[in-house]
Amino acid sequence: MLYKSGIKVNPAKAWGNLGNVLKSQSKISEAESAYRNALYYRSNMADMLYNLGLLLQENNRFSEALHYYKLAIGSRPTLASAYLNTGIILMNQGKAEDAKKTFLKCSEIPDENLKDPHAHKSSVTSCLYNLGKLYHEQGQYEDALIVYKEAIQKMPRQFAPQSLYNMMGEAYMRLSRFSEAEHWYVESLHSKTDHIPAHLTYGKLLALTGRKREAEKYFLKAIQLDPMKGNCYMHYGQFLLEESRLMEAAEMAKKAAELDNTEFDVVFNAAHMLRQASLNEAAEKYYKMAAELRPNYPAALMNLGAILHLNGKLLEAESNYLHALQFKPDDVITQSNLRKLWNIMEKQGLRTTKT
Image (cartoon, rainbow, N blue to C red; front, side):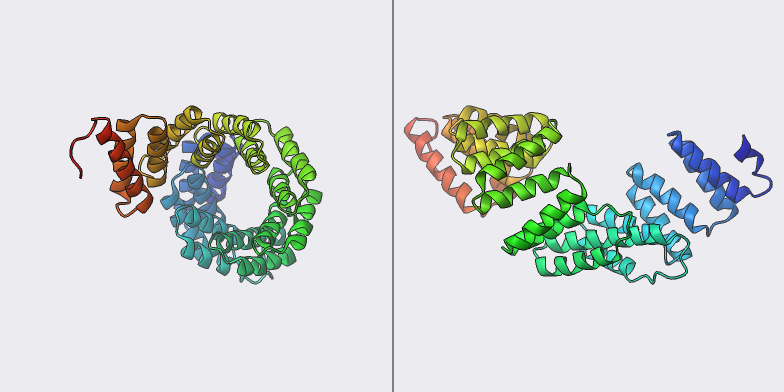
């Protein structure tokens, strides 16, 4: 009622404040209406444009959110948080180059005469972190490190650095600079002792450098920190597989796939691990799940075809091989597997003509 009573005095501010209250109460459509009313009275309020953009982004209305972030930046070109969220949306839409430009522009905003210097520095640091991740994903690890180092220089005291430090370690790891990678993994764990990604990445480094017992402790600690996170079991399973502890690896694979049964990578990797442990019936189950999660992905269809082929389910195998070739007609392995399958089918009288 207090905010509503202020509408006659300063309608733009009152509607904006009411929008914030309604949003905090999860009254999303009412909050949106309040923000739009505020902008009706004063259309160039950067904070209000940003707040509406954020509300839309949080409700998966990404193109609308981008529109309001753009207006917010137009109204206040130093609004780093609007650049950050714009870049994140573009990154998630697969528009890597546009995201890079946005993050880079954010990092170049001068940090004087700002409304909220600490929030600004946090947003700039996050922009640099995400820019580094984009370089990392494109295999440009040296460029990623340059950006991560700039982020470390610019980050304010209240910024939580564990993910940034962990990604520093990851970049050094990819460059086979193991001592520097270890330094940053340890820094990540010092800044947040229960940071699961750093337990997993450090565990992989320890395993790679022959410190197997230590590595296992970190994988087990990650599972202990979040027993419901399938990804932790997957990493531990991969370690067990590399140690030729096949049955233990298979158990971890099953656990991972049960917990993260909508995550394609986890389910697909679980199927691979079960196949390597010669548990072909279980592998078939998870390859089927993976193919259902990504029905148009040729690698999933080809692998499902291969396990069905191995398990003697020849007609189903043929169907999946042919389906895979629809999406990737020139795949040599699938073509070869299909020819071998047809030879078996002819001998069994299941096929009479060659294609």
